Picture 1: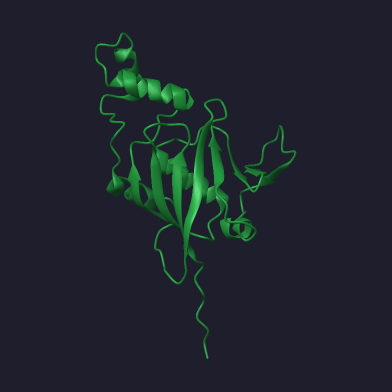
Picture 2 (picture 1 turned 90 degrees about the horizontal axis):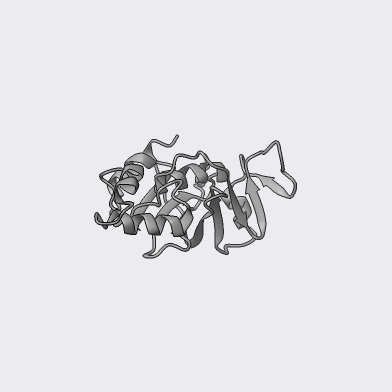
Length: 187
């Protein structure tokens, strides 16, 4: 009798960008078998970032980051580390850190573990709020200031900020359909 392969459980995650008001957040379904490297790619896509800065995950007080020729002391390699392996020990929230200069932090909460469901793509965003923060905007404080200036054409820095962000930016806009199209492109 042929045994059917058991599917790894799906995780429902809630991702919240720390220190930004109003909140920027996403809900996401991913396989528990996903590597942290793949999760990094998914988070980059969800926020509209280009993956041009260093990053790390901080899980259970341990830092997981890509190999670094300069300083890998005390860090765990994340290339092949699976989320399921790490979460066997704890399902506490963890943090994704990106662009150590700007200091972006995304808190990741595991809201549910869903057994027996199959997913045809690496990740699916089920809902979210607000546009992802603009990369290289100076972290949460810089981004919130830029968004405020962008909405005030009378501000002396308005044209500079509009040129940096682009003419079609809307901090309140989150497009679920486009987000999932971009997630489907992640191999």
